[in-house]
Length: 341
Image (cartoon, rainbow, N blue to C red; front, side, top):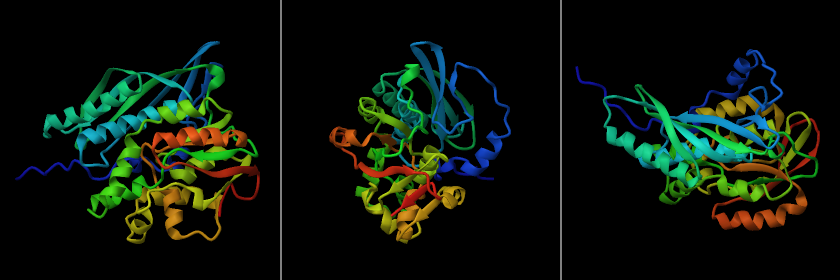
């Protein structure tokens, strides 16, 4: 009997995440452990854990890994590493060490694994961190990522739920990479759309984070598997409402056409199911809805900042070379958590 061919890219990235509803049910049943030095743990919806060591030093810990969403193993390694490193930057921290997480079929060419790990190691170096080791297992499918440790001052943590009424919302990367990767696997994505998606996914959030931390920032998260709306709902919690201006949201232009051709993801539908009761769309197209629910891999930072700082922040962010924008504002609590108009 012929051995079954191992397919490198079946569809992965942050679309491979468990749905937010399923995950919440599991986490809610875990016992909570009180430790005064655990500043942020799994009982919230933040991007990484923060543990205070001294009055001036805390560590930021996170891990992330997933199957490939692109065919090039080197680019996949870069994307997976950038995505894992992103959680440190979403908290306002600096990367120090990283450990490889590897699942790889023994029957697959080890040169492929070498290219994945090379791409990952280069992103760790770009982040200013040290790749210190890792762990690998034999598996039927390829999966790769990092466990990352960073540092931060305990009083300068970017929690995701500190939004203040009157704040502006800034998004530092375009949406739509999940849609583009789906179209790409069907050989339907343009080179321009694919190249922009890859540029976005391989760009470290280090640079945007370093800009944002210079200003009055009240809440921050990175937009990944739960999509723009899923992560935004986590930010506003039950304390406020976000108004999003659909014309201001940056996204990869071809995404509207791909949505019309139904190059969609199951993960986007899970995101829709989880938060649709908290969201009100006013005169929005189906394509706009799908883009806002689309799971992002190594997506941008979504930041709630003082409105007076917006011009200076945007002047710096625009120099990074990716579509970005002031996408909305924080309002007093209304019936819905998010209004898109």
